[in-house]
Amino acid sequence: MKQKIAIAILALVALCALLAPVIAPYDYSRQFRDTPHATASSQFLMGTDDLGRDRLSRLIYATRVSILLAPAAALVSVMLALLLSGFTSLTTLCLSLPWIFLFIILRALMPLNTRPLESILLTFALMGVAGWAWPARIFGASIEQMKQSGWLLQARASGIGSRRIALVHVWPHLRAIAWAQLRVLVPAYILSEASLGLIGLGVAEPLPSWGNLLAELQRPEAVHSNPWVLAPLGLLMIVMICLEQVAP
Image 1: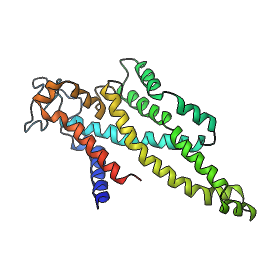
Image 2: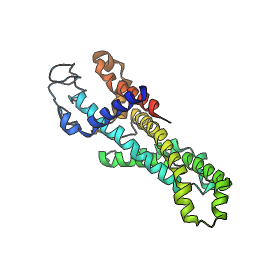
Image 3: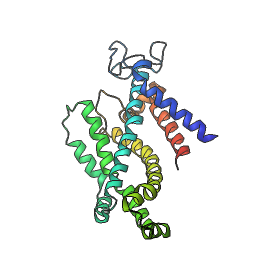
Image 4: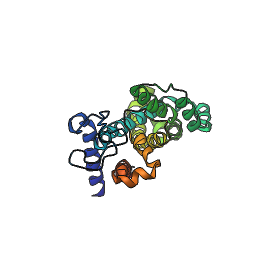
């Protein structure tokens, strides 16, 4: 029952994200310069930020960025892991690298005037590339285990070709593992983007993401003047709890 409720909530959040241009009251970058720091009202249900932008609209668009692109980055990691799982030495090397520091360095080297779309693609592409090593080790261990299994030895003794063995027998096992890894990586990448945005290294303004919206929490006076500043954190927590319910 809990899993069904979690799936329903995630589906609703994803649907709202997809329909952001339709359901958001305003464009995420539109400024109402006469009403900065506005409190919740009939015009602005969650108030406005320091630039007079509608918080609700920015939260809806931020959800579109964070919750839809994290699965894409996870898919990149899993595909790379499948392709490179046989390179044990490379996998071990990548696991030993301090990827978080390399990521921060590469992200910090980007020009300050980087366009938002470029920052999105770079942020999630780097996550996808950096996160392949752990699932690759799991794939590699599973493949090595299958090589010694009785059913595989019997299939080879029966004259079944390597291609058929790979497609009919090996791939179903790896597919289940790939799906499990995908479900594990998605929440990890959502949190990674939020963490990077919190320190100003995620998606670039004016495009909102959960990360750069959470950065406002570093100013306690903003929270005190408008509790809706906490809305991105609340939505992030709800999504993470739901993802935990549907995780393998």
